[in-house]
Image (tube, rainbow, N blue to C red; front, side, top):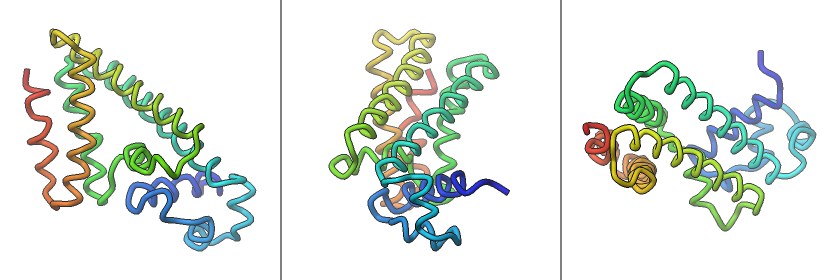
Length: 177
């Protein structure tokens, strides 16, 4: 069984990905986990602390995913397909990228969380730029930004349209080169 802190983070991540970070409270978390709200406050004094912990954990996990892709997959095309498959897993549970959701709620998150989100997206863009550099693109950072933008946008459109193929259509040209 996982510890309470991990259970809180897991549930908060799921709620952020499905409802938005500002759409749930500590009372919601406590009720779903089966603890008192004071237990939530014990681990995360304020909701901003919870948000920061979520983004840091997400960054760490994705850094591990990218490192595994770099280690285990030979070509940049394989790595790009793998990152697409990773993000497409969100669709199965009607979720979207947690950091994308938090970024959309920019005005309601504190500056420390914003900074961590900026680092998350820069790290992702840098990894993507490395892939596009290996593919021989003339401007890998720009193509990485375009890929990231298309990915995040297509995940939102999937929720609106209910059509998971939107992701493939939006990103197909990036991977086939």
